[in-house]
Length: 557
Image (cartoon, rainbow, N blue to C red; front, side):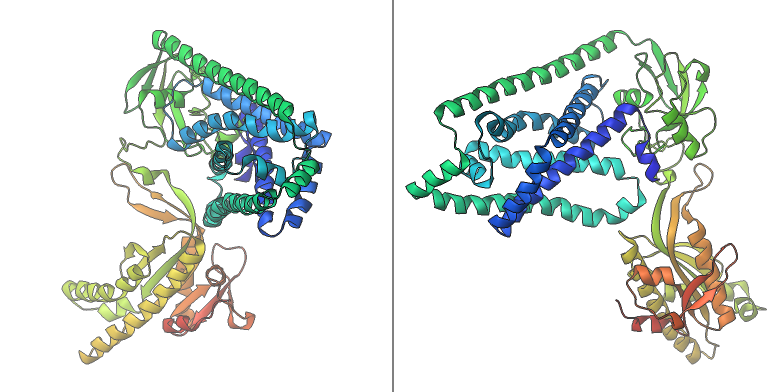
């Protein structure tokens, strides 16, 4: 999965690498500002190292090249776009990216420019005195938020299909809010301290001398540079907008290519435009989880007519399709550029026109799965009327299912005298804990159910429970219109086989070590049993419980 993040065109890869370099630069810069909350000495120490790196010839070269490449490729992508119909996250990122250079001109001029041209020592105090309680200071605060937001969206869009990123997302979101907040607080705290220092004329004179504060002529030079730079940025942005408008007008007049969607509309599109852009421009629902970057394969189509007329796929597209075992007539809509009429079938359609909902796309998650089975059901019901059998099962499920639901789980399917439940939560940790809570609840409910059976003169019911946590695939599986949502994978098989092992061990529940570790439960090796399960190459360690209620006694680490 990680390798898929680097698939795509060379321009896409360069944009990603340059964006990561700039995001690293911004992150270090903000963390440096945040150190002012510790002490000015801490700030100065970090600042010296940071400036030594970024103002060296290699550091300056890398940052300048990254900035130039990222801006050229990003602005070029906007200028060459066929339509502004795109996911909201992409549109927000583009708008933020267009705002950044307008504010950045001033920041770069009064820091690096002032240092190189006028010899100003652009340390923290200089920036505090220059920006505090000014309109430009507010703009720089906006620059922090906009730049960080633009970069954060870019990183998320790049990694959002990666499993570890999805698991770490709550922590990432916390850091995403914390870092710019601490940076702005560091600037506010240090600015107040510097403002107090500058109230004393002698302190102000000393500080200006240390900073090499520019005179009126120096500030005039910097102002002219800012003005020229700002007009240059506006000119570039205007050229981008003009290019986009001209291409749109040209496309409105020249639409020679017919695109026929199976079970969808027939539309006209400019020759050489990507199929995904055509779908967006025409309002045709077309899934693309990676935002059209050629990595997730969810935009892929089956070309039913016109395959021979299509330009051959790039090596990157070919590798991406091969990774999912796509057939020879499959293509990525975000990469293919029809130059002749084609007929395509969208493999994953968001509008459900093929009788499938969004869930039919399938998704992978790390979740806890529980299997439960009633012991001795066949012998118990032998000779009973069908009505009595159904009545017993319904009474049984009426008692044990509510604890599963209360713990946040859902019953995926009933299997005669048993069931399979899944705990679909935000993280593996909460899923594992929900599964353990359900085991306790089921055991308690069974005790009450058996007490009721005892008063009726009936034998108690015995059960076996297997609980395992691992990767599962969730989606609608089956013929169109008859595809219930379910889950598949080795995790499901392992949970089922754990439940089967409870019978041989004469216990009520088996919980895998994977589940316990995810829930943060401390265990000792001598408490575990090692099981050789069919279909697994290695033994599985699990914790046995004579009664499911014993799970409540487990302690977290």
